[in-house]
Length: 437
Image 1 (cartoon, rainbow, N blue to C red):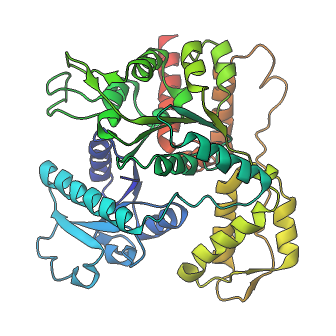
Image 2 (cartoon, rainbow, N blue to C red; image 1 turned 60 degrees about the vertical axis):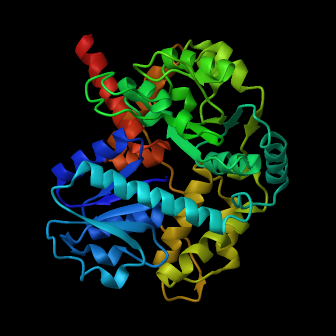
C-alpha cells in the first residue's frame, strides 16, 4: 500500500498511531488540521486517509472527495454512521476511539485488498513516465531491456527525478502478478531494519507480539523496491548481499531459510562509488547491484520535457483548483530557461503554486515571486573544505538548512530532498554522537 495520511489534532494520539502503523511497515504522514491536510493532499498522492470528524478548522468530511484516497473515519462518538452516509463511496469504515489494534489492522487490510482490485481493473500497462526527449526515450529503452528479467536493477539519479516511477515501470514490465512492495531504507530506525527486510517470529524481541512478514516475503512473485539503498548500515548490506546471492531469507528469531522469488529494484541519489571509497558501502554489494544500472536523467537534460510536464501537472490541478491550463509563452520560456535543481518534483510543486495563485484566470501570465530563488546556506571556506568526510559535509548541510528554515523540519527535509523520517533519524544520530563524545 502507498502512503497513509493521518489527520487528527490530538498530538499524543497521532504520535502513537503513527508509530503503530510504521511498525507494520506503512509510510505515514500526519496533519493536525483540515488546512494542513489539504496542503498535503495537494502535494502528494495517498492510498488511504485516516481522518477525525472533528478538527479545529472544520469537519473531516471536507477532506473526502470523489477523486481522493479511500478514507477511514476516526471519531470519539459511536453514532456517526448516519453522518458519513453522504460520502460512503469513499469511506471504507469508521473506528471509534479508543481504537482496537486488530480492528484497525483489519481495516487497513480491507483497504489494501480494495486498492489491489482497483489497480487490476484500471491497469492498462506501465506507469506513465511523462516525457519524450531523447534522454527519456533512451531511459525507457533501458527500462524495457532490464524490466522483464529476474536480475536486480539499480536506479540512480538526483532527488526528484522520478526513480520511484521507474521502479514501478520495471515492476509492471515483469508481469509476474505479484505485488510492488516499497521500503525507504533511510526512514527506518536501525533496530527495526532486519525486521522490516526479513520479518520476525513472535517473541523474537521486545514488542514482537505477533509473527510478521518482511518486505521480501510480502513481495513474493513481485518486486521489492529498496529506496535510498545507500542509507543501509554496513551489517545490513551484508544481509542484503546474501539475499541477492542465495535468494533466501531468515526472519529475525527464525531458524530455517525461506526461499524468496522477488525482483529487487534499488534506488539512490547518492554516488555509491564515493561511498565505497569512504568505506560506507560494501564494494561487493555495489558491483552486484551495478550489473543492470539505470540512470534517470535530471530535468535540465530533458530537452522539451519541461513544457510537457508543466502542461501535464496543470491539467492535473485545473479541476481541483479552478485553474487555467494555458501558459503564456513568456512564462513557458521562463520555465524552460530555469535549471530545476529539484527536478520534476520542484516543477510539480511550482505548477501547483501557479495553479492556486491563478485560480479563476484563463491563462497563467506570470511565475510566483518565489520562483527560482536559491537557498543561501551561507557556506564559506570554513564550512566545507577538503579533508572533510561525506558524513561531516552531510551534517553541516543539514544543520545549515535547518537554520535557514528557522528549525522547520518539514521544510528542511523537502529542500534537502529527503523524507522527514530520514531527517529525524539523522538528528537523533548526531545527538547520540555528541552524548558519546
